[in-house]
Amino acid sequence: MNKIEHIGIAVKNLEQGNNLYTSLLGEAPYKSEEVESEKVVTSFFKSGPNKIELLAATDANSPIAKFIDKKGEGLHHIAFAVDNIFEEMDRLQKAGFQLLSETPKRGADNKLVCFVHPKSAHGVLVELCQEIK
Ligand code: ZN
Image 1: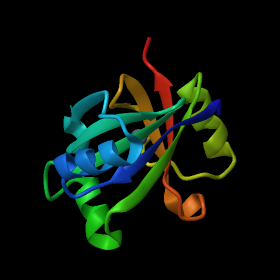
Image 2: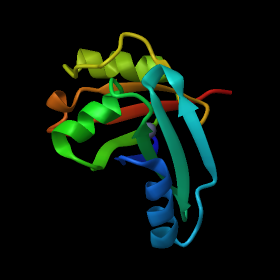
Image 3: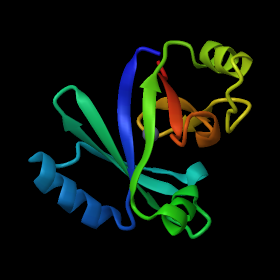
């Protein structure tokens, strides 16, 4: 794991989320992107060297809609940058972590991603992400 790549925050409405985080951080999001496979629309903010990802559901069956129903808006996941997602997935699986998918998926921001189940990380949804070159 190289560093925290971004922090994901679940919001009900992306436009409202964008407005609020633009005033909070003093800068508008630098990109917005829909991830159809996850039924979410995302936007990315920079805060110095760090990134914040806002995620809103595009469908009632989206994992983000389910998360908000259960827990409300707020901190959703912490993403770590990795060089080789396959190696990291293998390492974590051997160490007893439960992964949410067998193979990496294509995520937002040109990344291959895989999630670690919050049950195996003290309640935190952990995302691994590897830049697609
Ligand atoms: Zn993320």
